[in-house]
Amino acid sequence: MYEEIQGAFARLQSVLHAFNLSWPDHVVDGAVWRLPLLTEQRTPDTLQVKRLVGQTAVDATQIALAEFERDLGQVPGTVMRLPGYFVVSKSVLKQVRQINALKDDLAMAIERLRLELNLVPAARPPLMRRALGAKFSTKQLLRHIQCFDEAPRLITFTWAGHTTATGRISVAKVREKLQAGAEARASRESIRIEDTPEYQELRPLVNMADTEVLTERKSVAPHPRAMLWFTDSSRYDAMIHANLPMFVMAGENTFEVRELKNFDRNARQAKRPDEKRRIEVLPNRDLFLPTRKSEEAAATLNKVEEANVASTYRKA
Image 1 (cartoon, rainbow, N blue to C red):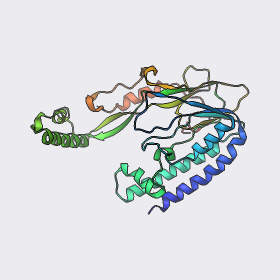
Image 2: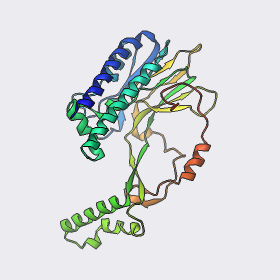
Image 3: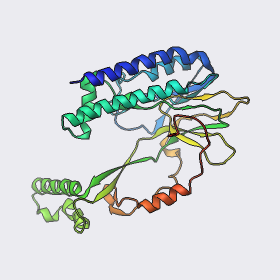
Image 4: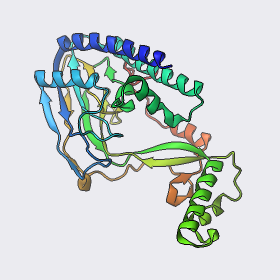
């Protein structure tokens, strides 16, 4: 049953092993920052980062690129992160794209098995762990490596402290959850179901069809990110999640790097002013009407065109 997943993982391991043997020979500069592993399901108010350079940074990165299992004491649901960068004298873009493609193949193998067994999307991690091992982390296994085939003029590492993730949920599913919550509370507190907060929250949905889809917004734990500038524009050309060190090409001139600082929840930046404006349906549950396609198209037209740099960041 799990042979396809195991085969895809074996191919990924083989290519990653070969990559780890070759890329250090081309490094001319770089640094990474070691973050403490989380031992609970929340990010502490402060995180101390440790800067690594030279062979120590290379060794740490070789381990991180192939580390797919949670470490001792690392709480489930969290990930090991090693933000950083390496400047290389020879392009590694082809190898990195191959690794990312194999990660996508592995994700598809997991998805095919899920569909074959007619399981819900939440079953993907358990299927993966049954195939590969109980301590394997889906996020560590499937996250991509970033590579840019040109020298930037500036790289800035920061903490993303206010990021949100969005998903979609049907009105029927929302109704089902609220109804179940209302019935449970009414039984637990010996009150009428009509007097429960959950039942009251059903009212804004009364004129909506079960098939309508809402946008569900969830907060994402603070995490390091990196912004890269290749052109003279004040607008960055790429912004990535700094889960693993990135690779960039060496150029004629050295470039500026603004390094990652310690995380301090109380001193983090304010929320971004360019967040999408959404119409709330159920404010207390972060449920909104989906953004209209015309609005999304207008926003796309206002974006600054990215620098024409071959990379894993660009779709082309």
